[in-house]
Image (cartoon, rainbow, N blue to C red):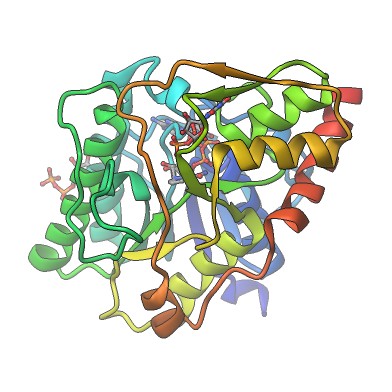
Amino acid sequence: MARFDRKRVVVTGGAGFLGSHLCRVLLEDGCEVVCVDNYYTGNKGNIVDLLGNPYFELMRHDVTFPLYVEVDEIYNLACPASPIHYQHDPVQTLKTSVHGAINMLGLAKRIGAKIMQASTSEVYGDPEVHPQTEDYWGHVNPKGTRSCYDEGKRCAETLFFDYRRQHGLVIKVARIFNTYGPNMLPGDGRVVSNFIVKALRNEPVTVYGDGSQTRSFCYVDDLIRGFKILMDDTPDEFSGPVNLGNPMEFTILELAEKVIEMTGSRSRIEFLDLPSDDPRQRQPDISLAKRELGWQPETTLEQGLVKTIEYFRKMLEQ
Ligand code: NAD
Ligand code: UDP
Ligand code: UDP
């Protein structure tokens, strides 16, 4: 691609887990990338190797404040994603989802940019429909400890669809299911990173509840491939929401046993209290993604865990 043809892309939350992978893939594709992050849960370490690239620009900025840049596309990922982080300052979490969406949509509207929202399976809450399809409206507690995240993301989706209806924006909404891989923070509290780090340290692996609750885990490379197809290869009329996740469902206890086995750990399993509103079951129905995007995950849990364990092993050795 000739230099003057480079697509200019904003990635909010670009120093976080998913954002850092996305920035890297966009640069490899020949885009100019503006990474916008306030380092709330992200860190420079995730993108330090990109800083020498002249087509990569890092902006310390909080998306709850207006942003004036000139770009072609916006990926809106800014928002803490781990329960311990999003519950630390729930008001800020809501502001990030809601005010952040308004600002990024206002930006997209002014410059005519295409915009993608990183929504979440949490919009389904503790689902009564299994597996979850996009037409399910969800079962969400509006006033619990997870609500700041779930309702913030639901409101952001509403804003995206209203900006499309009212202002004709081209929007893409991805409902992301549990995703894991390198660049997760070792202490961020999400189950895959927690289990791997504890197993590598031979500390007790903490299963909340009896471990019979289920999740479906998608490896990060598969997810980012899905983002790109959604943004680049679907017609403007296709907005989603579309589920992106791996439909292979595991109990949390199965995950704990698998991680202990794969790390060769001496850890035992410790059962702790289940947090409030913890969803019992979660599994995406990805028929729509298969049909409209021609996308499905290619990485098995074992393959993804090998790479993620390797990442954390190196990190803990340093
Ligand atoms: P993460 O916490 O690693 O990354 C979020 C990034 O957003 C961080 O770099 C953080 O510093 C930044 N951020 C937070 N508030 C901000 C603000 N006000 N202004 C600017 N930057 C801000 O989380 P992640 O796993 O990379 O998640 C990225 C996005 O994907 C989030 O919107 C999350 O809700 C969504 N998502 C992730 C998953 C998953 O399993 N990883 C699942 C569903 C949805
Ligand atoms: N905004 C922004 N960058 C822009 C344009 C708008 O951050 O380039 C923000 C601005 O704070 C505004 C919000 O987006 O309040 C919503 O913009 P919109 O044009 O939809 O609404 P209005 O400006 O009328 O409130
Ligand atoms: N979990 C667990 N031990 C941990 C961390 C999480 O048993 O050390 C459980 C948690 O209660 C939930 C599941 O693992 O049932 C997934 O948790 P995570 O925070 O990764 O994602 P979410 O609940 O948002 O899907």
